[in-house]
Length: 364
Image 1 (cartoon, rainbow, N blue to C red):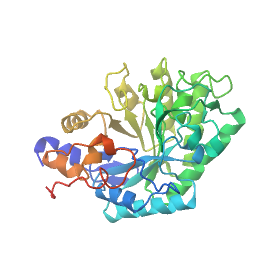
Image 2: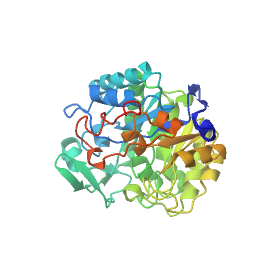
Image 3: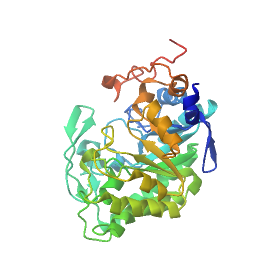
């Protein structure tokens, strides 16, 4: 290991967990759950086992209900087969000495009637269609126009989060991350570009925070706060979700999360998978508004990760696409070794090709 990168490989205490390094494997949708049950399988367990040297793994986004699904073959955590499938994954990671959190997900309007129970319309904060596509078994397709959740339905969705959080505990996860980013359901309530509601879940910032915080409180009824984090993307336009004044929304949200004692926030800095300077936002002020750990995410290289940690701008660094092609990313970063290039054609769906067959450094 080169001396300049030592901080990246130093241990870190996250809540009551001791991480062996500061490298987090970010959630990565791969659409390889069992097609009949949407349960993780042996191939998924092998994939996560290969990457267990990360300081912590956050799983691919996992729908909390069938209604929460937005893409074909993504895993769920709402029935017994899925709990058993995830147990294979957590056992594999723990056998390698790793730590793994599950990311709880409801896509909201980023779905299609073909994926919804009984072909129903997807649900969202408001009946506003997103100008994006999703993936179906037949290929790409525009997402369907959603319907707005009725006020008295929201408690049902919150309960789905609680049940999925309980299932994550039964499956052996070390903790959970609530997906509040990238234009999915929680983000659809937070951002005024989507949320057009006139009830107590829309309009004012206080009202737009209500549903996200109800979800957080439901999860905290199951998990100790030291084992719960939340992912946020304040300025990312992902999935056609924007806000006219994001600092007025996300600073109060993060302060509320801090009061609840969450272990961490996982922040997409800039546009998801795109430029970091997409819009002005004081991410360091956001970091200082939160009492727990700050995981920085988006287009981090080894050099930028080291610089950020040394400057105290983050506690942990999440890497996404680099983990797809480099199961031993931690070792490669430690040695400053060459990295495998990912094959985008195998990102979503398929078998072991482009999933578990990327060579490790010692294989080369």
